[in-house]
Image 1 (cartoon, rainbow, N blue to C red):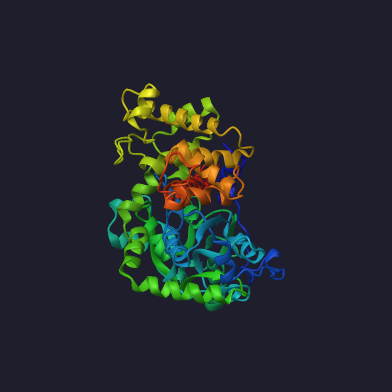
Image 2: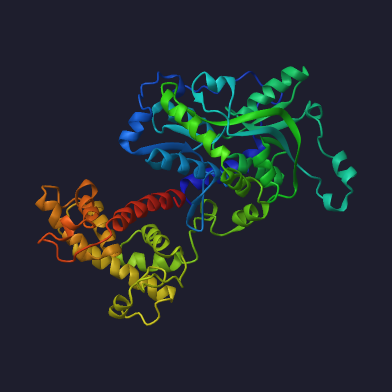
Length: 483
């Protein structure tokens, strides 16, 4: 158990006993933190993002917004972000916020360019950031647990034991995090009702999903969540009720810094265009309406943020990765890229198995069944290590690794040719990034693959070029989810 996991476990044990200010109504609040009061000094707008080639989106882990399942990165906001970054022609980089309190300070500090999570538009937040046009409309709802024997009761008897009107919360306690739209709503409710609903302040690192679970487990009595989130979680926690609204319709949007008007305009244009397409509803339904799939994901041992597992081959990969000193998550990234964890996968060129080993290579490495996961992974890691050793003249270990990955994909000879060309054209031949990678791309053009220096001829250079980028991107994602 990591220190972070221990802290979270410790707080979860204490939550039922930690009650904040239960003797008087909650005071008015603001979402502004000390860090977010600082002046906005970051000057990154749309043009700078295009020049850098990277769009940095701040979000949080969530089984609806951003998560890892069976080695694949998924999520409603994540899919929308991918479409936006592709439209801009830039690479998407996800920046994880540790909790909701961190979102605005991270944006203002310049850690990212967009807050891209299910963020409710509030007047307090609008003082610090600019929201996009809303891409979702929902409302806040009360999350409460049904009576223990609810399956044996009639619907009328169940409803009699549940809160059906916010007025019935007067004198009772609702558990929520501060600096959220839910807290702001309780403050407003107390003013509207002219009476007191008490507040139990939860630790800021808890997610909405975790607070819903606390209600289901009976550790807290009530919480508040956005209805679309609460509704889909009801499929996994059938003991909860989410039918009692506590607000009118509220708008969900992304946000940017106040000095990013061009980015804001482009986001609005893009979100409007996406919402007009039929696949927007397909994406929405996948994450907020398909309750069977949602339940299957949360129950899966390969819902990585909960289990730390990526696929059923983790143990095999770890075993052979340790023997050669490789990070097992890098090897998993290669396997996903090669076969999507399908041991029966076979390429048009005859490569087979999880790590897509060519028959001749398999024979050299002593593999008699290329589809056997144990043999295939052992041989694949061994071959990858061989490629790494081929580049022992590369001084930087990360650059050397990129040479090895490119060689694994298209062959050592083609990468060697690209290195020779880089040297000929006065590029750093010991550097993959902005060096040899440029010439692996050029090896698909006659001028370059017909050069006298080139021994292995033509190669479709975009494949190894993108292969290295994809592997490293996925490796960073896997590292993030398996801390």
